[in-house]
Length: 266
Ligand SMILES: Nc1ncnc2c1ncn2[C@@H]1O[C@H](COP(=O)(O)OP(=O)(O)OP(=O)(O)O)[C@@H](O)[C@H]1O
Image (cartoon, rainbow, N blue to C red; front, side, top):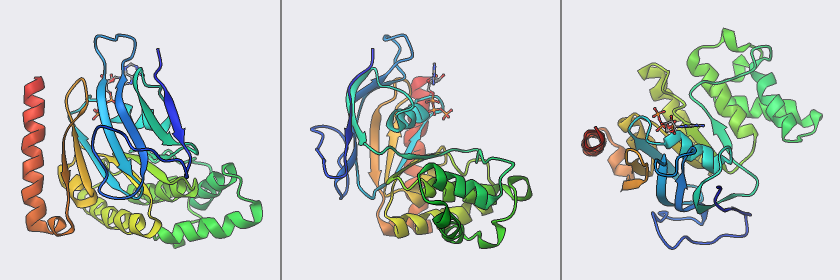
């Protein structure tokens, strides 16, 4: 059985009666008692997920392995249907970025971005310029003619980010996009992503296992319980808490909560 999915247009916005409220901005994603099972209703992956995400928010999602983080993103992306509760998601869909860049190997970096623009219906004569702008936004203006195998992992993820921005969706879902990168490259990409988020005003929902990454990037960090997954705790991250000392304290607090949740489940 599937549950109702309501698609909100840019103008049509409602507020959920329950769950996490956004810090500011109109709600763009509203999950109300959302649940998902894969055939066994007695063993749902997600149950009673209540969450409201406001326009322009950067939300990081933490939780033990297998608690349903990716499933939650798939539901918001419309790739899976909920089996309980209801949700409101943007009518024009969302953009998705994964851990693996999944670029087409036979296309150049620029070609991969131009393809996304083409699929969005951007006229041919505008695609080159727009792709170049997006490459510049991710600081890859020199690499447009290179194919994916000629790029480092970090550069491939930059192209993947530019490609997801090319889809021109307001909501960007990111599923552990930097997990496979080394610490220094990841750090650089954090800076890039924070800058791009401020520049574009996108709403970003970012899944990670890395607590420091969540503190570094998120305005709000949510902790999902182990199966069945639901939001059990959340932290607002103030700007000053992104400074190293305070960030470390907050990360410790989140790690303790995450550990407790993992051991409770074990
Ligand atoms: N299409 C599917 N059919 C059956 N079970 C599924 C399907 N997709 C996910 N699951 C199950 O749902 C549970 C949650 O998976 P999910 O990938 O959402 O967790 P996760 O929190 O993202 O995990 P990780 O942190 O390890 O990536 C797992 O037990 C998984 O096997």
